[in-house]
Amino acid sequence: MAYDKFEILKSTAVPLPIENVDTDQIIPARFLKATERVGFGDNLFRDWRYNSDNTPKVDFVFNNPIYKGKILVGGKNFGSGSSREHAVWAVYDYGFRCVVSSFFADIFRGNCLNIGVLPVQVSAEFLDKIFAAIKANPNTEIEINLPKQTITLLESCEQESFEINSYKKENMLNGYDDIDYLTKMNSEIQEFAEARPF
Image 1 (cartoon, one colour):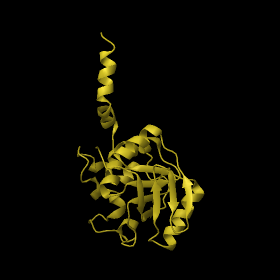
Image 2 (cartoon, one colour):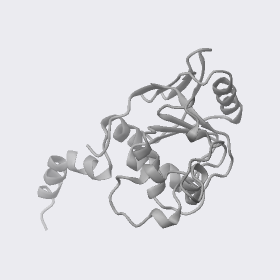
Image 3 (cartoon, rainbow, N blue to C red):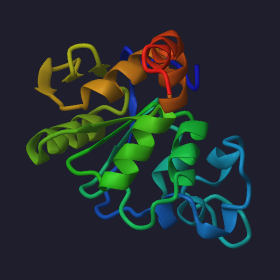
């Protein structure tokens, strides 16, 4: 498996109600030198989390201990900008397994699905409800049900459905990346090749 299987996630969430968050803000370019997926979480939103002397910025949500969880709730147009997959590596390495927004940049969405972070796109109205619920109670739990493709505010039972490509859904449920998926089909590929001699 390339990453953890994703089926049903129940978690509190970290709210980031900022629109047009781009990948350079998610992981600044100076931290892209590593080629393995580990350690990027330390620099997730680095310039928003820390001052120039590396002290935490007290007004940034990640530095507020009342907010925690495996779900990051972002504003509209999350993940715009350059196509760096390191941005999603940072999100995953930090501990998030799901990002919720009312709109995702296409490349960021694709990188999420390849790396094991579920991008859940909701309506603007439902996103507002999520932010309001977290503001009222930071311990608000959200359920992400991938088999049913639903997101639910557990306290109020308000729910909305979300879309996902069927191929990517199967991969997420099994913890596969594209290579894992092809490896799983190895016997079928061999049979196909043998049935068509050169």
